[in-house]
Length: 450
Image 1 (cartoon, rainbow, N blue to C red):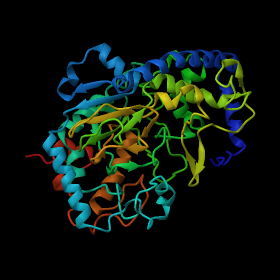
Image 2 (cartoon, helix red, strand yellow; image 1 turned 180 degrees about the horizontal axis):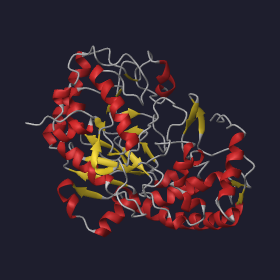
Image 3 (cartoon, one colour; image 1 turned 45 degrees about the horizontal axis):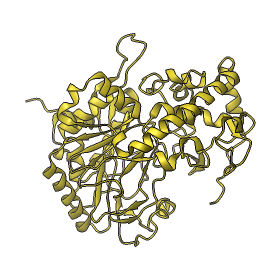
Image 4 (tube, helix red, strand yellow; image 1 turned 90 degrees about the vertical axis):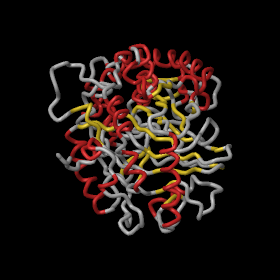
């Protein structure tokens, strides 16, 4: 494995700056670090023993009937399977239409695709996949995608997830924010076939070094940085609304606030069949990830006492933020590994989501460590449309307005690598394909009044 490029020296200054913002920083975070490591041992064992059953599963029809304990479990684990959001046959029909769209338009861009320079490095992950066997499509505006995103049930599920967040200050409504008004964030789809696919190792989306560098984003983790990690609330809106998650404008880096990332299943997919994997404890993973840059091991990885608390010491001298790498003029990550974040025990705790069927959805909190299974050992496709939960906020609304213009012109959405677009393709989605008035609002389009 090659050694990642080192981060600029200014990031050691950032560590010292952060340390200066919190009283008794070294003492408090050192105490917290020990507590987190102790708790990880307990929770990791529970996760590894339970496997996919650790991931909460609920029916769409029961969302408004869930009790406080069930909701708390979903929030702590940061991930959930919501079943029967869309009718099975409708989801299967969308998959068939997507396959037909790709056949009708053979020039669509997908991975692996050697024509696209920005994707060449990403395509390395498709080891063993022929170049002409596209499985991950850089398409955003096909008719099935437009219909799925605007389906009333998808938008209701999105609003329900958005409302798991709150403003703890309880000082009244926040101007321009409505968690019950979902917005659309256009993303892609995959139709993955059996075989090896190493494109998505464990990582966290929605901001890289910004988690520490951006003052507003850092506010989301202030309890952790003050040493009071148990009080950290991943669902507190403060900090999220004005956080800059893409300070360096790196391509393929989301600039919006997605409460949950998600996908809609268009095929039956079980563990070992190329599905999603998550680390299902967002409180612990956040706490460990945020404090990890302030500690270093005395003994190297592989040593007998590598995981022992005594092997780790407080350190502000290094510019490294483990799991963060320079990329495309910005930064990539967090991408934890067993070497950089050993106490997460990722090889044992990255948990495949339970078996899903067409019309089921899977959602995971924007801070959750997630990956895609390296090998698909099944016999059928693993097909999903990526559809996250996005609330109405001032920054999100501005993005949707920019995204709307790309939709109407058949161009790539603003956050994604720019290419020729889809306007010339046969069967591309139009505004008339949006299924509901709330779907038009979610796309920033006017709602007709009879």
